[in-house]
Length: 110
Image 1 (cartoon, one colour):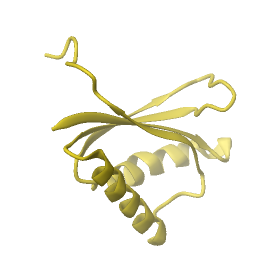
Image 2 (cartoon, helix red, strand yellow):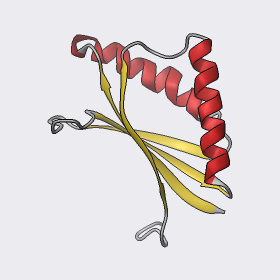
Image 3 (tube, one colour):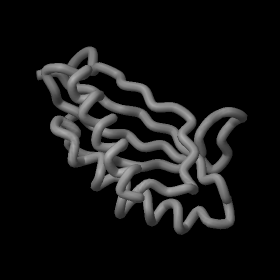
Image 4 (cartoon, helix red, strand yellow):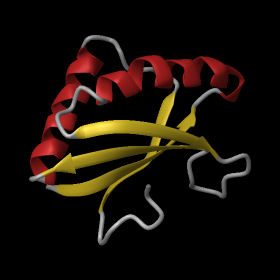
């Protein structure tokens, strides 16, 4: 089983509504994403001064899977389904989403 992370950068399309955006992301979007087999947990971060073209918000999704392509396809299906159900927010602006495979052991893990 390989370990991966999905690194997703986003912005809020209406900065005055960031509180609403973050609430949606934490209570709706992350639980929806975690329905994907192999995606185990998520952690979010905020950059108080993002550079041009980068996301203010970062989500790290920890993944364990034997086939990242299958996991990625399942995630795509889930997100499409949630979009069709009206569970996506008009406030989300996706900047980037990239999968990274863990190359070696975690250093400092207890």
